[in-house]
Length: 307
Image (cartoon, rainbow, N blue to C red; front, side, top):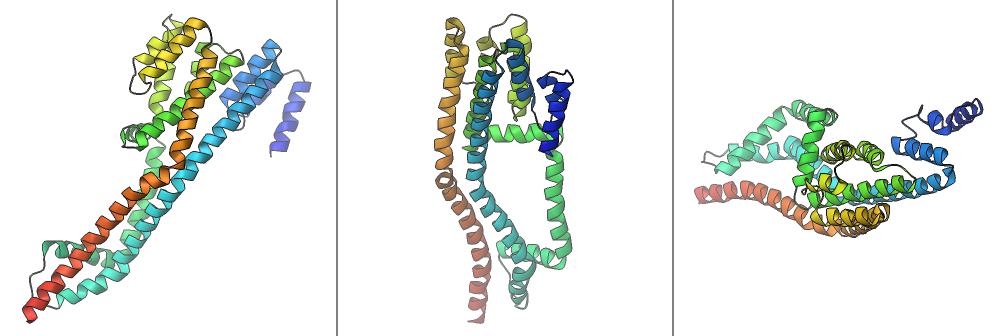
């Protein structure tokens, strides 16, 4: 497929189109950043330099994504396994255990009655439980594809303990890396902000960058635009960018910011498993403890009644 795309690009360029115009026909392959940097390279006569910056940008972005996904695999597998085991226990195991308690004419603790009620429902309506689980997962995926669902999910990630700080660093690193690459290729700040706003995944960062592009167009400094959103852009970021604006080395400052946050994200992701593991163990221990109490307490009560 990609071979046919490249052949079509060559055909269109030979027929008189510019390279960036030919690439723009394939937005799923060549992103807006890619097309913008190629366009600037063609207009300035430094296409090879633009492609070099672009290769660095793509390499850094791929590296950041792979580290983030790699760190999330462990907790995702654990949580997924817990859900599957919990459903299987509720459908097949717990109903057999709780049926024993019903044979004794004794008052059961509240916790045990709740577990029995859940086990009876899951055992008697296994198809509904499994279908409901699939429906919930599918509904969540469908909701995430809507603007409201995406906005709610992004807000939750930004305000979630531990994860919120990581999400901010990832978005700041990506923002600075893309802006640095674009500006070094000769893209203006306004165009760079517009392009970057389309490349950032988080809705709130995307909105701030798009608004900043409009405000910079009206004459406001970039640091003033970003500084009004201190939750997303910390004070140290705006101070460094202000130095870059005053000294005329904004693209170099952007590169330093990108390298700093990429290093922080790298260190955090290396230790993410050790950070999240105690929380997962506490959660698993709490669930197991509740089930153990719910099953042991009635046994103790029944033993007393028999005595």
